[in-house]
Image (tube, rainbow, N blue to C red):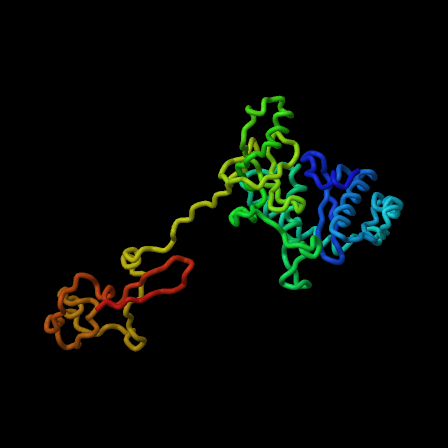
Length: 344
């Protein structure tokens, strides 16, 4: 198969196997699709990988894979391509690739959970490829801060959309894409319609970007069976097509458990003046003083025992004495601070 064919967008329903490659020299991740684990399909995938490396001036000399039967059958075809393949111990895996597989899966799960709809399974390959592209654009601890695996492999900085707001479009974003004249003509031929009856724009879902189309994004927009390459689009808030929406996980409402200041004072649930230890004895004052209704209960112990409370009048107050001592302002549960405000 011609290498140029591999550089074109693959059919969305064609591949259901993801083959992951890690470059030992640059750390570049490549995820390619294969129809199955059949011998001819894997050879087709390897030819696509070698073609992409040769196009960037890199020479592929060896491979290391698991000890699966399909991998062991690739020795002769790869030898004809001037490449050597070695295998790990049976029932073991390539540790470098396994670590990156876990990283890609974690990112893919996070993206899937953030989408408001259920992504069809045929787009999982594009999702993993998008995660691998994001890792390639990230500088690692083993590289200089001005470079990354993408630059080491492609030998040029990445090219994004000229509009900064559209440069890093997230995966699964719903956009209104504008078709080119060639895309409209292809849709008209597939749908057997007149060119003037084909819409100039349609709703599409972002599937990532391709290094073979600098500054462009790949979109899925039915009825097209291939990913559409487009650089003119606008992000919109719309549920795409007939895909199922995710159920909204709404947390149960928890009322504020902090009581109001009036409730605290009503229940006497605030600091109040108390007798000291030496005053916790039986009161031996005359009953006439204790039962005097004119006395203030809060100043009763402050009066001399031999004089009635009427000889020491206390100015009337609109609220109990404890209200003049302090006021407690409770903040929400997230804060542990208690502010005391002394009234004059």
